Image (tube, rainbow, N blue to C red; front, top):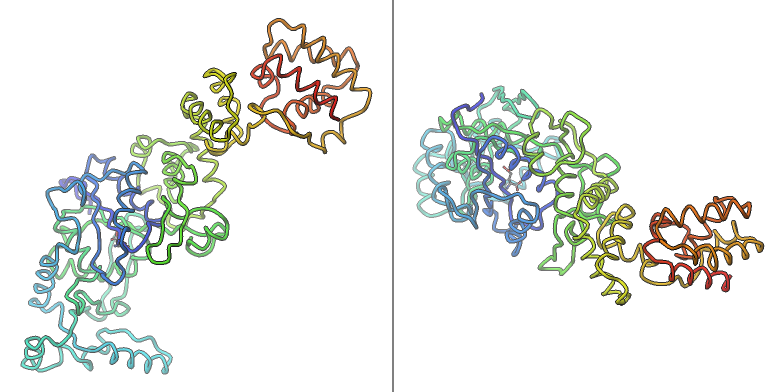
Length: 513
Ligand code: GLU
């Protein structure tokens, strides 16, 4: 049922109940990509009808997260738009209207059963080893407007006896719809309960509110998490009962993000246990004060975060792994969204960041490196702009995050304070002392143009002359200069440090060891 004539409109409809899980960000991303690919609008709607679960700050967090990711809504609580307001708590009358129409047409009813009554029934059914469901099989024995005398219902309504409005799900029907990810899906209506549409506080449930708003806001594609698939048949019925089947958006139920081990939904606990964030931004719980880490604060680039998320559950059909937002918009389609859950891989997340780090303009990295070096107190006037540019170029292939550069390349700014024992034990022999002495005092001292190539050439020919294997003397040279057994490319590093510094470090090393 492709809606050819309607402009594509998708929405992301989070509930402000806490920080946004990365699975939610992915839902937002796919909705955004799909809308943009088809020249449509992407809407941010806040679903805040569950006042018990409302968490202060969560709405702002959602807005800021999308902003950081570059998932920019065309219509939202901030931007406004033709279909405003975009916060469900401000749209109550609309839901009431929908509920009343369903009641008038005999598709919904008032139910006066108290929470205690329902709980007692639930327990009784459980004792009989069955699951309680408020549905066609039991509804005529309960306290609702379908079985109570009309006068009594009216009286109770007048007296404001607490009640809910429930959907009347017909028995014995097969409900079928086409999901953009899963294809044709069918449900037996006997397994669908009479869902509450309006709660006793007068607020709509998700089932009614999202649907009324999707109609009102002319949403063409409702893209949401797989956890809503079991509710989909009830939603299909409501569209049918409202005579709005032709305005029903196409549903796409996205697969879950799974734990790194592969089974079960990725949770905050997995992140805490394995040391990675499951939220885009850092979040401070307003009640407990507990802080949860965020991708932004860990040093991820939004580009890398988005790139990683896009590929968790979708593939372009080629080997391409690096995508800008524009690329994603161009390539995205539901055809390549997977039906099964996507295993989250924290190492791959870091890998994506490294890929984006390699693509950053080097002057940006150099400025950041300078900042880090200053903060560490390692700065001196010898480090000019050129120095930082070269250093950033050398360091970037060796780190996942921008903020790791200074620490990982400390030896470019500070003399070593010790020498890696493992390399010394393995490679150092006393006769080598004279080799390094000649290297420092004569060979390197006599090089006129101290370039990586020149240094490499003279070093290698000296080694040959002294019948030393480069495999032995090169690791030692590195340790003498940096203190460590591994690091950035050796000869370009020597060029950067410069003749005086290199000679001095070798001299110090052979005195110290
Ligand atoms: N408020 C719902 C949620 O947060 C939205 C689901 C949907 O996109 O329809 O899960």
